[in-house]
Image (cartoon, rainbow, N blue to C red):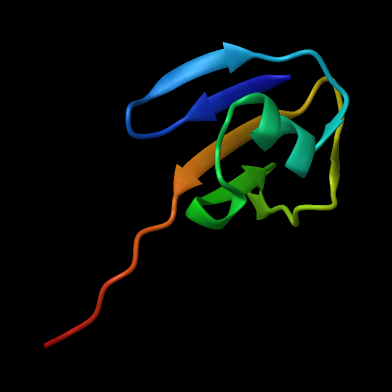
Length: 66
């Protein structure tokens, strides 16, 4: 699968299929710190990503108004 990471931006090719949790473990990324998106849809942690999936991993950014 093609995985696009943000901050810093980079692309990786990862052997699949994998669950979201397994992918993040392989990349040593804490699930609570990112959003995983595939085909424009937010993907839950227990979802399975197929070998031909295109996945984007974005850091969670939060903030608020003063």
